[in-house]
Every structure is written in structure tokens, then in C-alpha cells.
Image (cartoon, rainbow, N blue to C red):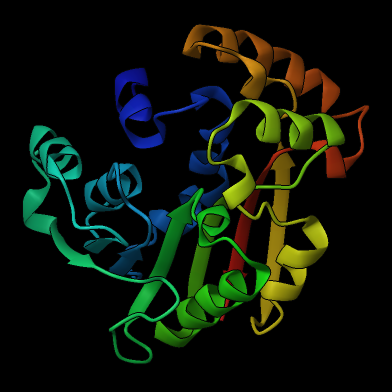
Length: 224
């Protein structure tokens, strides 16, 4: 996969978040898993990846879509594989057991409370077929430095609820299995994508000498 395509799929702190491509690749490339629901797709990157792997994709977001995901999908000539729906992740309009894959990136925090995050994962569980997969990459609570920086420098930081590892594990308790990896420490402090790329190289080293609870990204695989 070339770097331009990876950039279109991931879009921010690409070096760290692009880990999801390797972690989820086997599931995404499974030809038996045909129908996919992508949540929180304001930019449309994960829907693009799914469509390029010949999934029938329902691309959703809480707000009405602007042109960004439509233009991205048209650019890569996958618009025939994608349909769009405005959806609340805590109250999906789809029938039970509808999808082989439910996927999202950096969405739970925007729901604002642990209660709403639990409800969103219950909805994901409900619409998945038996044996289906929930694939998600999420911003974690991380270290005290991360928590301070979000409150100090991010205008919407106090409105997000960044879940802890314990909260994520409890939220996924309905699933038959749940596996995860964590990544990223310094990269979100970069002011540009080039800075974040450089810091991500240090993150790879620090991953082996810092507590898991300090890292800011979780990549999860939950199976119904």
C-alpha cells in the first residue's frame, strides 16, 4: 500500500495510527466478511479502506455528511461500494445481526461519557452477525501529561471522555473475545505531521520501557 493511500485512510499522526492496517489486515482482507458498517466517518478514511477490499460499506456519521468523504471515495473510484447514512452510534437504525464488521477510529471520546460509550458498543454488538468483528482504534486517557495538555491546549478536550484501559475492557465485556494493542506516547505533541512522524520513531522505542497506561492509542479487535 503506497504512502499517499495510507495518508488518505489514516489522516492524522499517520505513523502511529497506521498500525491498525497491519493489526486488522487479516480480518479486512477476509473475503467471507462482506458487509461493513463504519461509524464516525466524518473524513471517510476507514470506509475507503473497506471499499478497496471489496466490502459493501455503510459509511455513517452523527452529523450530516459534507463533501469530504464523498470526494475521497470518488477520488479512489470506490463510490459504488459505499452508501451513506446519518446515524447516532448509541442508537443505530439497523437491524440486529446485519454486519460482518463494525469499525471506527477516534469516536468514543466524542460521546462524552462512559455511559454513552458503553451504549455505542452495545449497539455495535447488536448489529454484528454472530462471529462478526468490531475493529476500533481509540484515544485513551493516557498519562497525566496527556490529560493536562488536552485541558490546556485543546478547545474541546474537556468535553471528551478519554476512556481508560479498564473502561474499554469493561465496555467490551459482552463480546466473546477481546484483544488489543496500545501505541503512541510523544507523537500527539507534534505541531505538524512531520513533527508527529519524527516523534513516532521515539514512541516505538519508548513502547518497551513505559507503562501501557501512558500510551494514547488502543487498537481493539472484539468478536461477537
